[in-house]
Image (cartoon, rainbow, N blue to C red; front, side, top):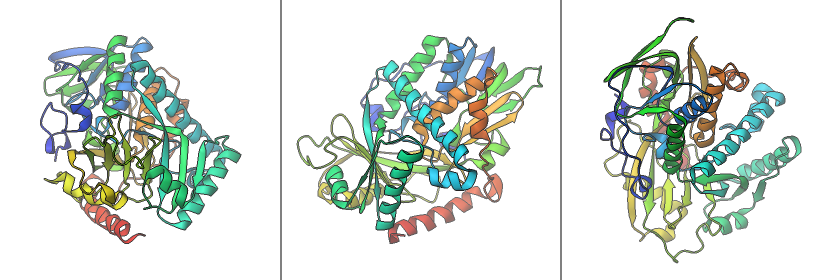
Amino acid sequence: MKLLYANDRRGEYPPSVYAQTIDLLDRFPPLKGETSADVAVVGAGYTGLSAALHLARAGRDVVLVDAQRVGFGASGRNGGQIGSGQRQEVDWLERQFGRPTARRLWDLAEDAKALTRALAAESGVPVRDGVAHACRSASEVDHSARMAAHLAAYYEYDRVQPLDRDAMAAHLGSAAYAGGDLDRGAAHVQPLSLALGMARLAVAAGVRIHEGTHVHRIEHGSATGKSRVLCDTGRILCDQVILAGNGYQGRLDGKVAARVMPINNYIVATTPLGDDFPEILPQRIAVADTKFVVNYWRLDDDRRLIFGGGETATYRFPRDIAALVRPHLLSVYPQLRDVAITHAWGGTLAITMNRMPHFARPAPNCLSAGGYSGHGVALATLAGRLMADAVAGQSDGFDAMAAIPTRPFPGGTMLRSPLLVAGMAWYGLRDRLGF
């Protein structure tokens, strides 16, 4: 199944509140015939846009292609949270790799937040501070408090405020959680606006963008020979290739595909709440909870509640996404049972076995990054810059991320789909039972 076309119309953004409330860019033309470039970038989400932008600003001739539109995939559909750290917390990283490596990964993630904020500011995209992590049990609340103290003591990060049940309820306008924390150094943003802003910056830097250009195969060159990126409408001859398709990349590289598995997620938006329900997110923070299939939400500038949650065991979107997500929303905000849902959409992200991003060199002249596991707004943006740096011979950051091992999924690409069915059903059941 080609996820690029399985659930969406060709060349059209999903029916998200993001796409329907901002001015979209004019379409970029498809690639026609043969062209040449220093670097070909495949995928126009945060990773590809950031890579192309930083390469062009370093003087490289860059062609960026996407089978659909700029920001069409997860980069234009997600919850917009600019989270701190890696997808795995620092105590897990310390146990697996030691504190020096955990600290290096933390510092890279701090760079990711700073870079994302800087590009948003340069693009004129507002960023709001604050992301709360809502815990379901007393043990999770205790762990959250220990992690806040640990970050302050060993990582010089004192932006995380532990919250008890009452404090969390006051921040959320909901008594659904046992407590948690509030990270004042994290933030949230309109995700499609960020992607389109990065595209404008890339074009201004000289990047040639081609939408509606599906890459079918890559023939990697030798250390001194050209690579060929073969598309449905033409081909690119280049010195370097960057793979930035994430969940929509398919099998352009088998080793990457075996380690980066697409999954779907779903979001709804309510009608603007106006002056009603002032108790809901009074400080306009964003929130994510501790379920395996995470619930996450925030208010947009018009006070719509944008709420993500729910799992499915197939790659086809359900016919009624709102009906899938509404019970999760009402489990947090039962007071919204009579409020209309105006938008509902799905999207495809990608996970890895250990939930850490997969950075790789599929060929001597090819770099790849993906598998952000729901933590990609900042890390994907950083990944693009790290790959641009690596092309220029400054690969320390890329190599630090690539050194984190990501095992292939059992059965590789052939058995991923059946395992997804079993895994999502199991973890969805665990969430519903409160484990």
